[in-house]
Image: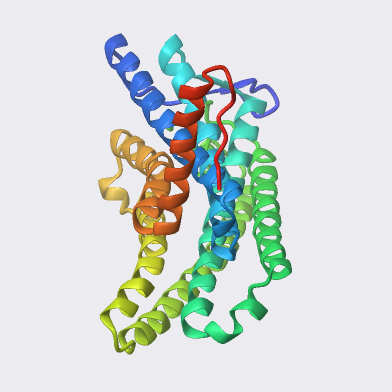
Length: 323
């Protein structure tokens, strides 16, 4: 078996053996990727162009769309390339880069969802202190902390994982580079334990965020249910339900992917869960938010209307959103 010093590439798991199914997977990934890119691009344009969305929630939603785009662009293009060209290889350095950016964007997304929960908590439970607690400087500091923490987390895990000696072959058994499949190739017990400890620390931070989210929504629902008018309750729920749906989708798919019992684990199930975990949330997040948030729907309508107007009046001109 080759060791880590002689490894130049890894073998990823193919979606199918038949050429027709490989091409089908390519076209499905292409359609999903284009939908995710279009949806998140529209969200970015709406938040950037419409001054009504220059709010803390709009700022965090813009950051969230960037993480969604990062998640899609980190893993899906390589899977599409392998399906199209009937190959399963990824270079050693390419695998390390993919693992780093995957961890970076997925961790940043979870921290941003936690911050957005804090935004909803302050807006509903402490409305008189909203401008003080969530000013522009505070929002920038929280977003920067989320990105910086995600960067350090990704850097530590990537450095720790790829410092392990690998002597169990180079087949990962997954369609992208992920920590558990790489750890299975390791022949260093001490290095394996070091990565496990890092994983425990990361899980502890994630669990703390999860507890904060649950506590915040318990307080939010207590306050909302005490609002006397149904219209007030509906308005409050309309600002919270999109975020709650995004958090539930992200956490449920992630937890089931990593904490499912070994007895029900199989390559095909792991493959399907990974697709569900990586591809579905970035695609559905913009849809969930745009359907439940009237300001975003209005901004998107203005952008799309402006694009059509520009195309009809001057087909060669660029398409810009109008306030």
